[in-house]
Image (tube, rainbow, N blue to C red; front, side):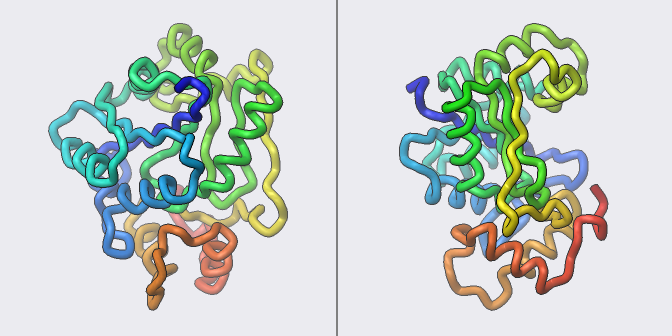
Amino acid sequence: MKNKPLIIIQSRFNSKRLHGKALYPICGLPLISFLIKRLKLNLPADYMIVLATTENEEDDILARWAAEENIHSFRGSDNNVLERYKDCLKKFPSNTIVRVTGDNPLTCPKIIEWLVSIKTSHKKDYIFCDNLPYGAGADVFDSDILLQIEKKTNLDDEREHINLHILRNIKNFKTTFPKAEKKIARPDLRITVDTIEDWLIINQLFLNDNDKQYNIPLEEVIQRMDRLNVRKSNHIP
């Protein structure tokens, strides 16, 4: 089981920026369900997907949606996300952890596969591609490194944002930041959901679209964003 990449979708109902956004509808599905379908149906069968949410009562509904989509869920700490990952890893051991955030419904499965392959072949501690549309990518960690960080840091912000300790101490880790190919190298675009405006734009991408929208390739997302003429700078980060 440890050889299976573990995708941890971190999500909670009580979002600081947009309360309840995990259940905002996209194409008739709750955002979190849209994301789970997108990953589950477009990644190899040997990937394990787990929804990691909090023990708060209001997150019961997220755990129920995970069950509806036939994936595991894990309940852990609220603001101490690093501890939540550590405890999740105890239950679902893996050598490779992929961090996906629940506000990125258009996370690209192909990018995840690409980054995991780099981690495996080059034995890296941490990998991230920073020239994608904001909200398309994911972080990939070596699980042993993540466990070491959990023991090492007591800073609140580093325990909430699990890649922050690595980025602040980058010389101490084996990292790589590969660049996406030109046709998807669009960091000027924003396809995350942090605001009402973000959510409205994501839904505009699928107007008059009768296909299974959660299968849309990232290239097509970019083309539709360009037709809408929306840029990252137009929104609140």
